Image (cartoon, rainbow, N blue to C red; front, side, top):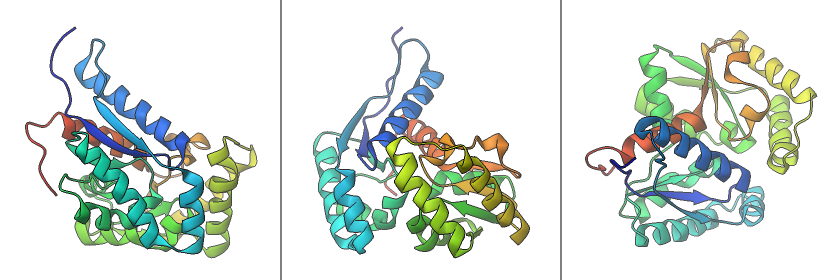
Length: 241
């Protein structure tokens, strides 16, 4: 079946490789759903070494992380990508620096989710992800600034427990039965704090708990990001952010 093709999507991958594989699958599923036939999304991926970036994050060297990702983004730009996207949530801490250093748009993960939350009328949400995602504020601040949505995070002990589960287990392909009860307990705590919905801001957490199993409306930020990429790639013209 012939027909319309997507613009070339630039994927900044390797953070971790499992998350990149998930993004690749979600993007191509979305493209097939939109275009049918044997269509998939046209994409170009630059895969980084997660071990290097994980060490840099543990040291708090986010400037170096920004440099490494920016270099990769420039390769995508040179390769003809219409826009770029990070195939992980935590590196969005340096998304603004990367976006400022390239001439193609960077599709920020918070924006499509923020639009959905706003359309649903949510004013306060819970945020689940790595310790960096929950503590550094880059998603919470953007959701508040761009969409007027407040974000709550779990207490410190639960943040650390979720972070350890993601880094020490899920990114290595290990899913333990007790992880589901942990996520449910954390989500219930956020709901008790006043969260009207939960934003699952991690590529690996959906491996543990499906969105429909949360005690309140749950939004898979990664899936929403991937689907938004296909929408942008099929737009008449990719607009600079």
